[in-house]
Amino acid sequence: YEEIYGVKTSIAVAKIFEKCQNATKKVLVLGRAGIGKSTFCQHVTYRWATGKLWPQYDLFVLIRLRELTNARYPSKEHYSLVDLVVREYLPYDDLSQEERDRFRELCTMGKILWILDGYDEFAQSIPEQLRTAFENIISTQHHLLTSRPYAVTLSYEVKMEIIGFTDNNIDKYVDRFFKEI
Image (cartoon, one colour):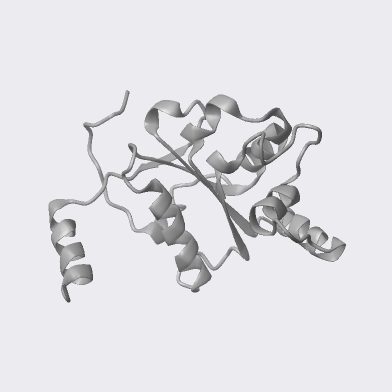
C-alpha cells in the first residue's frame, strides 16, 4: 500500500528538520522503489561535506542498511555504533582509543547525523547482533531513515516523501545537465 493521493508540499532540503518538535531530530523519508531515496542520501551527505548543509553536525554517517548482514557482521558478538562506523568506513583499519572516545562523545552531544538508507531492505531480517546498535540509533541519535512506504512499522513524528521530478523540474534538469550534448 502506498499513499498516492493527497496534498504534497515541496520543502527545501535544508529545512526538513524544522518540523521536528523533539530535541533529537528524526525524519522518515519515504518513496517508492527507484524514486531517488539513495541518491537523496548521497546528495545530503555531499552537501554537508562541502559545508553547504546542516553545519550543526560534526559528522555524517551514511549507512546502507542492506549491507548490515550476517555475512558481514558475524553473530558471535554484538556491535556498537563505533563498530558499525569502523566496519563500514575502515574495513582494513581501526580507530585509536582516543578516536573511539571522541566518537562516543559526539554521539552523546548529538553532533552526529546518521543517514540510514533502505529500511525496507533491512526490516524483515535485522541481524540479532545488530539490533541493539540499530535501536540505539533510532531512539537516541539524530537521523534520517529512508524506506519504501509499505515496510515501515516504526513511529515517526516527521515523515517526508520523495515523489520524483515534476514536469517543470524534468525540463530544468535536462537543460542543466545535458545542454552540452
